[in-house]
Length: 235
Image (cartoon, rainbow, N blue to C red; front, side):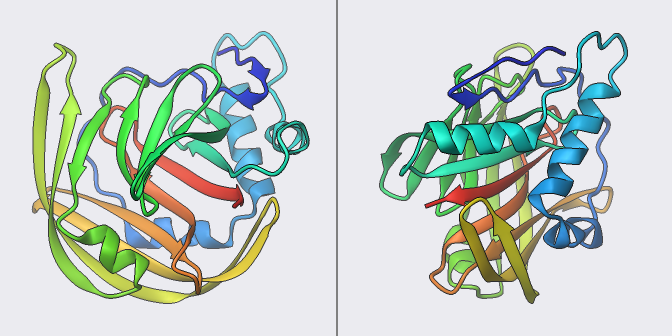
């Protein structure tokens, strides 16, 4: 997979093959809290260099982060990593409507977050079209436990929208130090486990600072896309 970077880095190609339904455990998610940007960058680079048929050296995510922050000063930036294939970006804000903020990369792939909670993706294939969160974003931002029903809508291979309704339990964890870019804060870990039935569940993990800002998260974006790691570099 080739990736070019201009200004804001590209996210890279997204795997179009759907994976079989599989659960993501809370322990695996929470372990991400101790990962530094350097470790996430090493993961991205190893996934890219490990791809069959790779002919060129994989881009260095840390170098991309540093060069992008220098080239685009004084604006909010966010590092985004696709855990499935190592694709990554340093994205900037494209637009905002209330609490909904859309982040975009130079190849026009975008993610929309409501108070930091993922509500939509565009340009990946098998996109998350929308989410009705049942009040989850409010509970997460205020660091409160609770139970909600969430409605996910995805675009299938026939360009039709399919709905997934899950029950999610939100729980509070410990406190982690999150350092990335210009940000270094203590953050409360909030986990969200969502379940359709006994055979299918997934987890999201959020790190919320004392100002109710989401400084890091790992969020499920659907079977096609998998987990996305979001990490703020600058407010």
